[in-house]
Image (cartoon, rainbow, N blue to C red):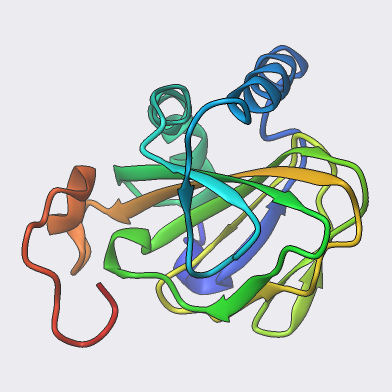
Length: 179
């Protein structure tokens, strides 16, 4: 079986079941009423790092991620954002802890494709794109809808050079600007 390192990224339809998606949608909308952090990569978009529910799904999705990527994975962390009108996701590559990433659409009021190395991919609610977050430039143009909840699950290859980032516990950041 080919691994993600051979194909770089792919769209996964129905990454979340209908039941999972219903729970996540209700949760995300309610979470907007509590304090959040403000991220540099996407101004105007409240975000949550290592959210307890999202980290639970990060762990629950390991078997699916391993099947889709052809790799044995360690989880690192989950991060989610609620994008609002005119939010952007600046073009970037992720840090080492994001060697294998999935971005999944939980809720959207309008289409908002992500580009990975200038290939535009549209997701429906419940879909995900799995990609090499540390290696591939990705981002989005300004969002024209009212809201979009997107979760990011990050993993590392158990047998790869970034395995030390398991559970996102490295305390000293690499000096190459990728930390």
